[in-house]
Length: 170
Image (cartoon, rainbow, N blue to C red):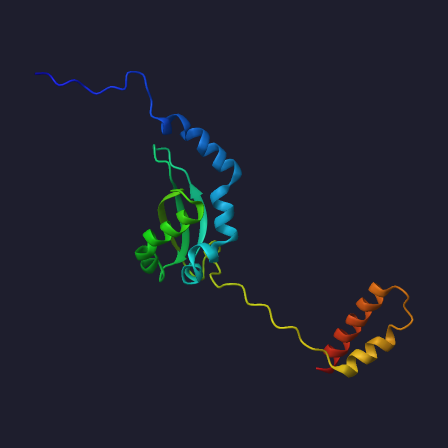
């Protein structure tokens, strides 16, 4: 008995009809790229964020609904990231609430030496605690700015005076 070929009889799957529209809307809004770049430390975690930076999110030509996240790292961290790929993909997708990223690709670069390969993977330094000014310096700066009527200008000149006196001492 001849086997009938399965046909859709003119019907298409829903994702096939909506795929291009969803992709265009997502690319136009930059949903994946902007969120990943601005909140990378929270999304990936501090340990992975110290080793890698997101470079781009690529949408393939195939029928896959998910995109490919491209990460940039140094050669020494690549094997560690390779092992963490699936966990990282799950973290990124948990932020979006659906399978936005289908694959994670790791790109290696040299830590120094190449003009395009010089990428800083260190996190931003934590802001220093405010330094309490010396009471004598505050009094001198207040005396210098006593004749100023405008309160905002007077405070700004007091701070300027304190900074000048503080740096001239050292």
